[in-house]
Image 1 (cartoon, rainbow, N blue to C red):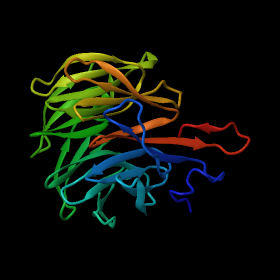
Image 2: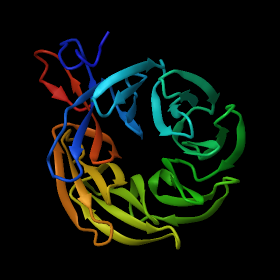
Image 3: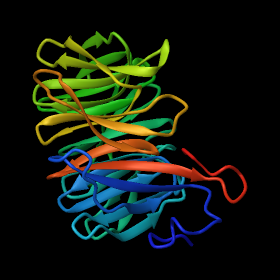
Image 4: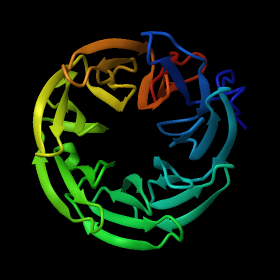
Length: 315
C-alpha cells in the first residue's frame, strides 16, 4: 500500500501525483509538496482543507492545508472525473456517472448514478449540477440524491460553472459557451469562441477561457467573455497550450505546456490590462489549479517507469 510518506520512494510505483504550492504574492516562492496518489487530479478547497480526486488512484484524498499533511484517503474503485464543494459536503463525480457525497470528517457515501460519460459538476444550493459528454445536464438534490431537473445542452460538454444568477457551460468540445437558467437548465444564449476552450474560470463578471490552437502545439489563447453581453471582448496570447486555469487573489492564473512535453509553467494575468507575468515552473504536468488565501495550488503528476527504462514521464 502506498502512503503519502512512501509515495515518492518506492521503485515499484508506476505513477504518482501531488500538490505543489506557490505564493500568490512572490513569483517562484514554493511551499512543501504534498503527495496525494496517482494520475490526473482535480481539486476543491474548503476552508483549510484541500480535497483532491485522482483518476488512476480512483480515490479521494483530504489534505490539511495548514500542516500540509494527508488527513484521510477514501478508495472509490472507480475513476474520478470532477470534484466540487457543496453546501455542507464535498461532491465527487466518477467517470461512470456515480455521484459521491463526502462529509467534513472524510466519511463518504454514494448518492446517485447519472450515466456514463460524466464530465463535470458544480454545486448550486440546493442542487448539484452534473454535465455529461453527450450534453445531458442533470440537477441532483444535495439532501436526498434525487434528480430534480433534466435538461440538454450541446454535445461534447466539457465544463460547468456557477455565475451569480446563471450557470455557464463549455460545450461543443470547447467551441461554445452557453448561459443556462439555474431553475430550469434551459440554455438562454450561446456564443461561439474563436478557438477551442480547454478550461474556464470566472473573475467578477467575466469568463476567462483558456483555449488551444489546433494548428500549433506551442501556444494558446486566453479569451475573455463578457457575461452580460455573452460576447468575447478580448483575446490574449499564451506562451504555450493551456492545461489548467483558476481565478483568485485579484488575478487569473493559467498553467501552460507544450504538447508532448511534460514541463509546465504558470502565468499570472492582470484582468483589466491582460498583462501576462511568468510566475512559476515545474518539470511535470499540471492538471488543475486552485486558490487558497495566499497560496496557488497545482495538482501535478508524473509517471515513474522504473529502473533502466529511461526515467520519468508525465502521466
